[in-house]
Image: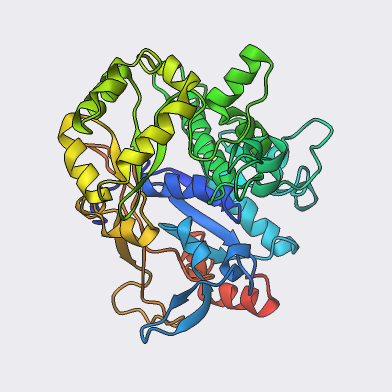
Length: 424
């Protein structure tokens, strides 16, 4: 990964028109931006993406005081250029259509048919630019009885059964369905969408049999939510038995959960019999490894009610740090259960450079919004020849409007007139 603008990135030359907001669509386009694409994000004049107001917490100014800019927006809008255009106005629609003529990709997450009234739907823009790859992100897809419903991550977590397998069992303290701590369906949808877009680019442009044509990508949070149930879904489809909540335990592995220690808790993730045997030896409990109830993973799962309490009595005898030191050279997966603050202080997180501070404004520019730079999480993509290029922090609202419109051939007088009319 590099923060130098001299490295163009794997998607250099690709232009993305980002009509999405909130999380799933912006997560997708941030991935493309990190890989070098020129992503222009269209936002509502004076308001912007919904998440600019989703606070607290808020960004701090140079003096450490809260601004009115929510930090949520910054999670998924790095490396983009922000322009403000009123797409409800004919002049605004004309500007976006002109941008689509030059774009390779459009990403939008309006309701099904929501952009048709503006002439910005897939059919309308593909008629202008047949090479356009147009990705629509919705809650439930372009067809089916729920197609016109609004869809949100939490709703989909509930509908797909994800909440039914997350949290403590009903007969345990704090039992009941629980959402995941981040909007995981939105994030996975952004990842799947970026993969689909890259596949469509390959189909269009590859040298052997590229079609030269774009296509429509129909991404639905519901579809993604069902897909990422993964082994839990496959287990149900194999047996017809719906899994339930097990807290931090694993339905198919044991021991694979949190354990109490002398000063808190730790996580043990023992995935095979060899790891279990090495743990038993290190914990000075060789009888567990030879116990016929615990000889294989399947037997340990079947007899976890006997195994886990016995292990908990032993894990309480050492601190978390002592357990990690004891097990780390024995290939037994063991680690702390960190807060996010502790995670950013972790030596490996720091060695990987996972917190990155980027400038919002170029040298010499006036940071009129009082936010000169923003710290975020680095891209996890590590390409040896064309690493992600982290160029700029998430933009201020409309920060690049004049720049982008000038690139489209509009002079200063025309831009000023559009601004006076409220179009930009």
